Every structure is written in C-alpha cells, then in structure tokens.
Amino acid sequence: MEPLTAHSIPGEPSVEATTPERAFDAVFAAEYVPLVRLATAVCGDVGVAEEVTQEAFTSAWRRWDRLDRPGAYLRRAVTNGAIDATRRRGRSDRRQRDLRVVTPVTADAPTDPLWDLIDALPDVRRAVVVLRFYADLTIPEIAEIVERPLNTVKTDLRRALSTLSKELSE
Amino acid sequence: MIDLDDIDPAIESRLRSSLLARADLASGVTGPDPALFRTSAPRRVRRRNALLVAAAIALVIAGLAVLLRSPDGRRVDVVPATTVPTTAEDVAFVLDRWPAGFGAVESAGIDDEDLSNGVEDRRVLGRDGNA
Image (spheres, rainbow over the protein chains, first blue to last red):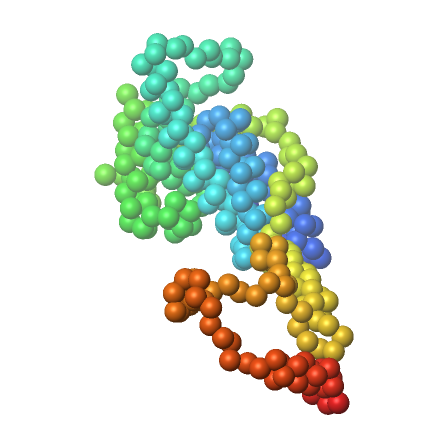
C-alpha cells in the first residue's frame, strides 16, 4: 500500500530574493501545485481549485510587502476560497435540480464512493477533514486557517469522523 | 463521540487514501507564468507612485505661481474671462445717482480749477509718488 505521508503543503518557504517580484515568483513556483491539490481535495473540482488558487496569489501580491508569512496567508486564502466556491456550487446545483438540468459526467474521471460522503459534509467540516488527513496539519493550525476556536474545530472533526465512520461501517 | 486521539486506523487509512486520490485529480496541473498574477503593484510601490504624483503636482503649482508674478514682485491677478474689465465707471443705482429725484441735475461741487490742478499733480508725480 502506498505510504500515506504528509503532503507538500506550503509552510514558510525560505526565499532569499532580492526583489519582491523574485520572492513572489519563488513562492509561486514552490507552492502553486500543492495549493491547487489542497483546493481540489476540499472542493473536488480541479478547474475551481485552480481559479481559487490563482485568486489567492493575486490577492497575496497586492499585500505582498505586508505579509510576514506568505505561505500561511495563501493556505488560508485557498482553503476559504475553496469553501466559498463549494457553497456557490451547492446553490447552483440546487437551482439546476429545480430546473431538472442534468450535468454530464465525464466517463473517464476517477471516482471514489467515499467522495460522495466527503462532499455531503458541511463545507467547513469537510475543509477541516482535508486539512487534518490530507495536509496533516495540527488542530491549532487548522483553527487558524478556518478562523474558528480550537474546541469548535475539534467538534467539527469529531462529528465529521462520526458521520464518515457510520457510513463506512454500513 | 469519536476520540480524536484514538481514531480507528482502518477508517483513517481509508480516508487518507481517498483524499490523496481526490487531490490527484489535479496531477496534470502545472503552474502558469507567475507574472500573470502580479497584476497590480504592491502597496509599497503604489505609495511611492502616489508620492511621486503629489510631488509632480506640487512642482507644477509652484512653477505656475512663479510665472504669475511680475518681475518687480507684484502678483498678477488672473481675471476670469466672465469679468472683463472695462474703462467705464461703475453705475450706481438710479436713486443714488439722482438723490434729488430722477433727472434732477446737481452740481458736483468741484471747481474746474481744482480738477485741473489734480491732473497736473498726477502728471508731475511718478508712480512711486516722486517727481
């Protein structure tokens, strides 16, 4: 079985760049793909994940000179962007269901039955699960990203695991 | 309720592999040119640009102020186009001009001789009052 180790989620890259442009480019080169993967794990859509990540980098550049920890800022922006995108998609899906519009499914796209369960979790709870079990972040780190108290994050995680365990054991 | 320190290893492993496969959906993604996302200048650069623009405006205003001064240091008034100066004297309201009634003629009380002397004085004295 493939070893499930921590994945390359951006920490604080050591950037020894002489100009802000070079520093930005270095962070971009190191973190773009890991952040798209993180956003994909949260929202399940690569296109949306790329969009969210690119918005995060654009936003980071606007405040680049004030960012002490660009990695932390990007991680938070991408996670929250993916949560928001999922909420918007949820509203759009509900409208499509009301209009009886059928979304075509790509035949060769890989799927996993567990993804439906993950997608059925409330948005923030899903993000907490991804940050814990994909990104291997600690509870305090997750609390900082989703901007929630520690105990709320613990409760979110427990409830998500309880739901997933129940479904998986059936 | 599940204890976070004692999660069923089978469930944790299943969850981790599922999330990894989900993230792998983005395996074909490559980073575009980062310059595309440096679309607006950072705050420091914007502040510097704003200062440069302010300095340029101040310089233009100072230049105009210098240009609008005559060589002897007096300020030259800039007269708006709507108030073109004329040589005609101000015309007072009709009741002021004819306090004794409209059309009545009053003597100005100034002798022709006094008037001539005044004109002579002006001719003799220069602009600064010296002869």
